[in-house]
Length: 104
Image (cartoon, rainbow, N blue to C red; front, side):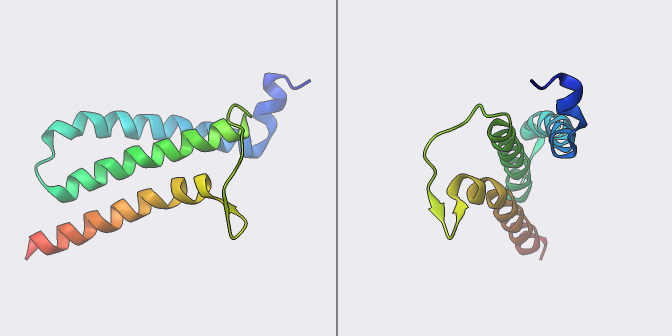
């Protein structure tokens, strides 16, 4: 039976808890910035931060065993993991494209 100390003693779980904490702070600040965002580029950055935190939450649910069920595999990788890890990067790419396009 795992106690809290045993759980926190595992490096992967401790790293996930740090990511959850920092992601929560970044998401809170992104939500506060939402009303001040005047450009499409900033909106994509904010949505990218929020989707990144959603990906961290998805990882936490999987690690703690709260999310289970059938997985759709693409080349051996879970579709949920593939989407949750790559959507924020795609949103940041779009943000940079809009920033560069509007800066000219």
